[in-house]
Length: 429
Ligand code: EPZ
Image (cartoon, rainbow, N blue to C red; front, side, top):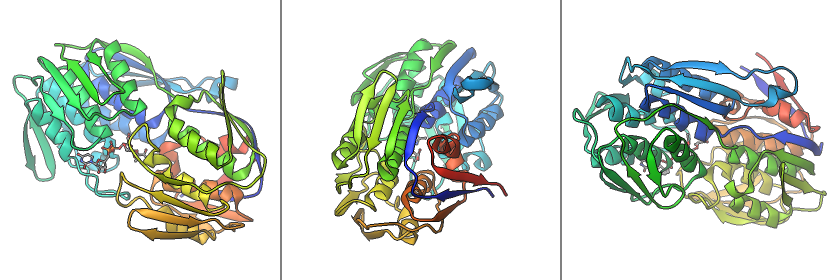
């Protein structure tokens, strides 16, 4: 298993190209199931999760062609995927595949909308919490699907097609909103989604569906209206930049010091996070080319923040912020309100010398003068990258084990940081 070795203490200077967003790419790929024509996606990041979803979609009959490995400078560009679901050959998503990636459960919406039937394994729990799918099922029921649960599978049927309906989510859910959007796009009649997720990835999916011929309005607000259409066509769509990757590298610069252009990043996708770290002491400025972040080595101020659905501070940046606050001058408080168990990084940060006290959903972080390198390991993607951030400022060597978590969501992480002066290398095997 690969590991990443980091020796801390080097500032970051240069340019980091921001990749297409993982969490937009996954639902966009799944949307290809809605049409027999070809969906072309540009700016797709090269990530393990994208490869895994290609295999899952292949099982349903989607042909995927990949291009975009261009030589020279363009090697940093995203790839282009051409997805063609001319014929759905299998409406079952088996446990062996769904258990590897939770987002693959979302195939249930397009499959039942297009074929009248879907049989999808329940995704089960994962490292950051129980993560149920009851709200996704509720959304499909509101659109007229008949739901049965049998032997760990959710079976959705709508022999005569889905019907427009009212879906009021009691809690904001990104996956629930994606599922409702994709299913309602092909339903007969108008659907209204209330308390919809406003995340930029939801807006990106709605934009792409509209290019495919869907009639969706209000994406990005809490009330989305979908006028169902009988069929959708192919389209071409470029994936929006990854706001979590952007925020992660901004925090890396805040931690290590230096001056970096986050190329292609868009500030409006993570304003809450930029305001917060800006207030803590990072210089942040928007330019035509992206977002420029710099820190001159002065101390960082502590923060108090709670994670929240967009436009609030994202749960997917909570671990990275905690790593940063380990070296702030004073005591920070970070409350996790989205997932009940998303603190796997706390005990690993402690191995580097962090002083963090957990009380329910709130972590209190007492800033320390210096972290010290150590072998560490994390059990989810964002927790793993928080250890990389801490290691960039830690004295001596940190070895981050189980790198496959990072490969799920960060494209060429060691390369991007290495080009800016970090002492970082992947050790194979
Ligand atoms: C998406 O997960 C993201 N994943 C997550 O990113 C992200 O942390 C999360 O949204 C919140 O922003 C992808 O986009 C692939 P939710 P999702 O449904 O859709 C509860 C990462 O690191 N809930 O918005 O699964 C749920 O338990 C990943 O890239 C129900 O109770 O999250 C949670 O408390 C991790 N019932 C809350 O809603 C349901 O049926 C929000 O979850 C569904 C969700």
